[in-house]
Length: 236
Image (cartoon, rainbow, N blue to C red; front, top):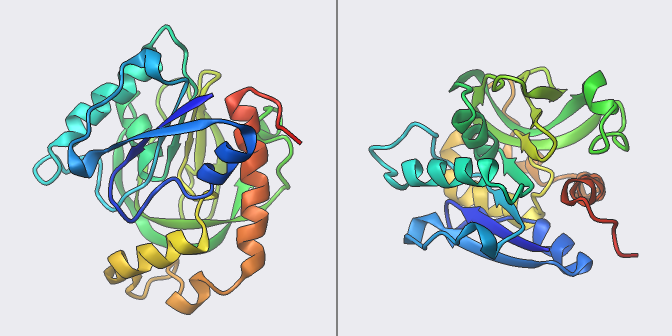
């Protein structure tokens, strides 16, 4: 499988997806929005990953490329190629936006490891059927979104209700991060430390990196999810 990745800032990449792709024999290409890379034609890739980033989906005055990116994401979703599409945090918000949802500031900023609960709908899907009734995931966001028409809510948590959704059978948005490695969190802290001002759902810096088991468990869940999303059996 040929994965194409949309990357919004230098310090936030696809995280452990790179390792998953290597283990499964997939290849990765990318468009770096911050360097004005060109977008590929739809026949040059098989699946699209839209990563996170510190910007908001409506900040066109600061990030003029957002409009072009949204067009590319929608074209990919609507393409007859039927590419699987995965959005992570900002990526999920961008997908929600192009499909008719609304993105706006959440009541709380959510930064840290907080429990996520799959919905009953999720438990009936191939993507989430292996997930426990509750699992810790990493969060770093201030916005949320309404579900696009026809999308199914797959996960929720206390600080932000809409945590995961599926549109059709191949478009998945995750507000939380299972792909983050320790390096990803360290880089985000270095570049976005102003976000860590005290709030009910903002953990102190030392807690963000404290528990090695969180990274291990998140990666295991995520690799199972990616196998199902990609529609290919894992290589053992």
